[in-house]
Image (cartoon, rainbow, N blue to C red; front, side):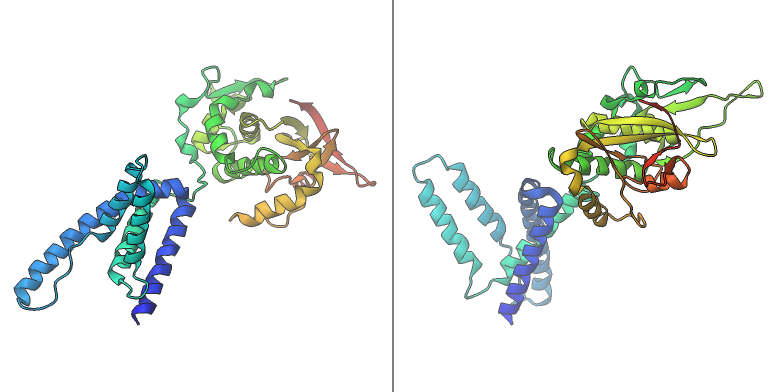
Length: 360
């Protein structure tokens, strides 16, 4: 029975180690593990001391006392001592001795459940320390509210009132104000191959999950409606977690530009005369045949319902352009653009915009 309990505790310890590695990686785990060991050793010393005081009162001549040992702490100290003296000529002798002590402590033939119990508690404390600064998983996406207004570019006001008439939407793109956020969102994806596609999809998902579609506020002056578009800066859109199509498009273009992904914005008109601003991004034509599988794997791995997906993308020389309109369901949801009347599918199955006004 002791063997079963021993291996059960050993497997549980291994499981906790794997969870620690998944949450913070090896260095994040190793940094907190010694702290947990010292903390648990101190806690155990106090727990055992209090237990023994009570046991001595109730069962004066009993064998119910607990060892107040600090085996884990002593073992860790021996390894630290070996590493500390690593530059000495006796390093290999010291490390051999330490490994021998560790092998003896494992007690293969005579399992010491107490040592494994201490190890599991130390690992559990490590998990608690990791959870304190990891509210989500390893590749955590920063909360939109973490971007403060003062992080905006000094040259970019929080919102601009745009009069009716031609507007240079590209001048409103501000990649530097959102660069820290963009870099943190794409850091787990490679730079080459399908990495650019995955980076763009990750940026799209963040905006999709954190920024709602809301129309511009109604503004009145002297009881007269002000018929001018209001376009927020990227950081302001993130701060209020909402905006209309031009706010979404400018934010998406800013995030893509911040990590070096080519992008453009289209101002288009639908069949019912409604205007819309959207963003597209480009990937290298060399990954053309991998786009569908890459996006399928990406969307299958996230916890967001996207419905039936139909990917369309357009080759233009050395680039392939994909829609990154966060008012749609996924990358690149051109099918919904047809349903909304912004695109037209011709009898020869070619697709074009119903009315493309400008590209920025």
